Length: 276
Image (tube, rainbow, N blue to C red; front, side, top):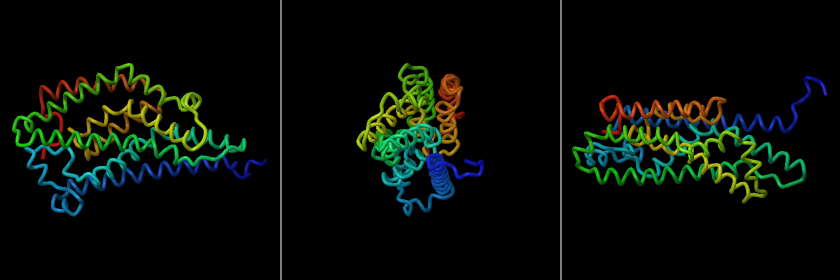
């Protein structure tokens, strides 16, 4: 075979999958940034966008869900997950595709990669739904409370401290180790067939959730459409999962979050929050 020969089918398929993941991540970020700009630029279009900004103002100024109705919030949440998590999850998705290609070469049934990815997203979708319901409950409990509106930055500071401490727990380390080792994950949890792919996708989603849930909860008090906060979380998630020094990055992030959280508790103005 010459140097100019066509790339093997397996290599072409892997390149196509990587391009598809990149395109979906870029599209996810584009949707989120567009929506954030729309919400930040004007409140007059809120009803047309499926939002109820009046609800946030009735809740003592606290609007953890940015006034979004459930369908819009969940659509934005899925776009966030695609944009923020696909770059970090690409090695695991590519490992699944590579394993499937080898199985196909042995004559086994080819399972589409989306059968693995869809359950992974379903785990994060369910987490987003639970987070949305919890945020609505908090807004309801804080309705008309001046104390809650005045201390939301301190609450966010407590979230930061808690998230920083979670970074140091054995559960975090176990989940991160599973996410950082695609080959080990495939060898340990491989299941044949479509339901096997669903099982692996769910398991990967659970480990990913166990690794990152505290980071994403921070977005509620800080602002679920705060692009800077989302970019910081996405960068940390990518560093933890995909870079050689990811485990050290998790430890450094723990210290930063604890210090920043304590500072926010003492000086609330240093932390932006979801106060209308």
